[in-house]
Figure (cartoon, rainbow, N blue to C red):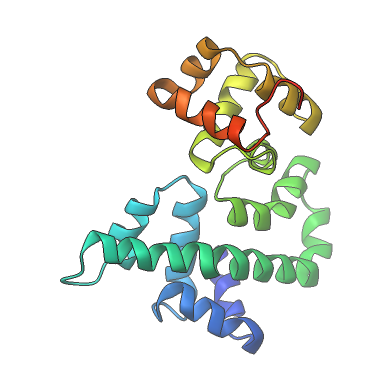
Length: 192
């Protein structure tokens, strides 16, 4: 389904060049882009994406990472999320009626999942609060375990009040770095 959607997007002149840039000219049928998006949303790291999709023969990992960052952050997240959103607005009517309310929400949030690189609606909310991509899903699991309601206000409060031990439980060895990152953005302070 995603490959078909991107195949359609490649036919739209206003977005075609952006998508070609995002794929490095690979896969104008949408399959390549759909595979990259699935892995991106599924949590693949930039080095993984570089190795799997963007590394050319004889290219160093640094060069491949540069290409990947330009493709993902420069084109894919913007053009892909915008394009999917545009397609949804054109085709959603009848399809949405067949879906459960939860499926509808997930469908509507697909552009945000692409933009933020996460695979759950709860992780989108954490990304909106400044949580790094790689920390969003582990924190979703942590908050579910603690039965924190999934609304922005509750999540903001839960983030601000996490103890060092809770961070360590949720994030393992990188906990202090993630906590410091949120504190430096002003989103992890207790008065937030």
